[in-house]
Length: 493
Image 1 (cartoon, rainbow, N blue to C red):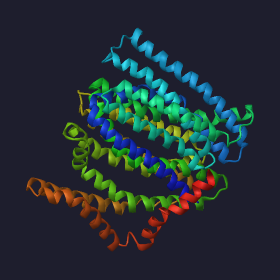
Image 2 (image 1 turned 180 degrees about the vertical axis):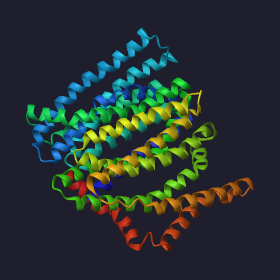
Image 3 (image 1 turned 45 degrees about the vertical axis):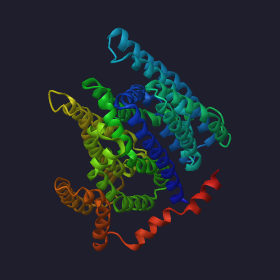
Image 4 (image 1 turned 120 degrees about the vertical axis):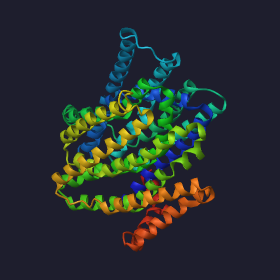
């Protein structure tokens, strides 16, 4: 059943991401980088304050997974969340008016102000699927957790294609996001009838606050690292550069879906295992994930990074040529984030939230230093490419620190798969040299079909080295057992 939960969570998120990426390509081609950049600027502006709304979700999942009264937890969590929405809106509006009327900040266009206000409404409506996800993730019920997000994404992406085909811009795109949020609300309320809501529990409220004090630090630094970089990029350049970066991230970021699925499923399982002092289960789960990651994801990460010019130019056209190198770096950054996910979840599952908070603080300091060195024209002035490199460095920092502390707290010896990196690096650079030879020698047809040979030869090498076996192939096919997944969804719904 665990495989089905993980796979359904990944399949739902993958569907959302692939539909969003494909429609994003259409939007990017028709609307252009400035419209894409404006929408992402509004999202980033509002998103900087989203830490207020993300503080208590982890606490709720941990308390329910540890066996607290679920009905009282649900009611307490819901009351806290409603109060948080009020604080969230007040903080954004206060910041906006201080920025505009006290510091007299000049937005690059009047449209940007409208985009910000509409983004606030869109974000609030988007919170309801997030609340739903938290409530059902606590029960490790991935079907009910993911379906509202999936339906909202389908509605939003269909409507936004219609909008750009009709020639509308950034404001219309955000209005579409608002409309899709309204469409999905009735379905969410129907799902909530299936879960118990008890009474507001003052003792539980204190526990939420106690757990969430370090979570504030974790979420705040994560939110800043997610959104503030785009605001800094706009300060040093313009929204067009945000468009180049955002488009590359929307495609390259699909690898992060695995990490989100791992975090969604593993955190409550790790929390339960540590509560029972079952370290063996933790060790088995992390080993299975690393096996899957390096045997079936790593080769395709190398492929995407190497063939970024082919992918970006084919999907988006020549006007997004500036996104090519950004995409290549972001794919590697996404893999580093994905690899770190189980280890950071181990620390959270142990309840070491203050340790995770301190790790995030040091990661944020590292992030800020690298961000200004890479973006400031007085240093490197790399614009969107600087953002991508900063993303990679930040995720590598998190990976190394998470592995070190996960080992120190669990004393589980992890296989770091260094051999895969040595093989991958040598293979990557040799193939890169070969691709350059094909392009410059006018053997472009051979270059276009070479990605197939890249994967086939890489797997042949791993098979000869006995790093991948027939049992691994059987395991991969067992994941995609449609009957088992269908049964799981039917039983849960």
